[in-house]
Length: 273
Image 1 (cartoon, rainbow, N blue to C red):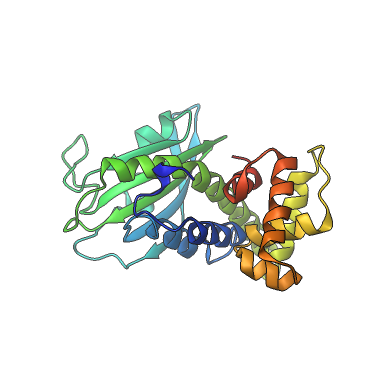
Image 2: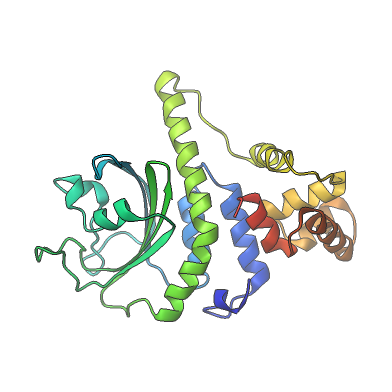
């Protein structure tokens, strides 16, 4: 990451470790918690609310909003937010017009004192920043909240979040997709739940690698998978009984073959960003 991803001057190694945990938790209950920890490591965010919106483009309307989870502090008097599904009519939600109009990923900043066009306090009392992606007729919305007693998001923080959304939104889309698959299977069989673990990560890595004209060695694959799962260089070196420098060499070789640079480049390649 460049300097734009250094709001708190964070340690990049730890940041990549947190990113690895987030990638490996796509599809399970730890995803929102890991996302909150990843963002919180760089800038203060009290609460995350993640929802998926389904729209009817032909009618320019929202037909369904699914709340996929929350993480961070519980809602308080100083941090009330409007749950997407709490609007009496879905199309009365303050974000709806922007959600319907977006053509590319978008960041929307809402101040705690703002109201909608009718003067209603739809926005609650928290400072809010929402990252929104569009894929077919669905929109993934990641809403970040701060209590109104705290300062609002700064321009530097908003710039960081806009940059970081290139990584977060594709992961959110995959998580929402797996969540839908899990719900469909659960409706037919309570025991048919999707397990997203190292095996799932390896399968997705192989699927991502398959269309590429690239051949990685066994060790290069092991190192890539270990780092993507959140492992550190020393941990991988201990596991494979090699030196730290050997792990770095395997990573450099794999990254060169994939046409990326370093661990962050590998993570972005993995999510297709």
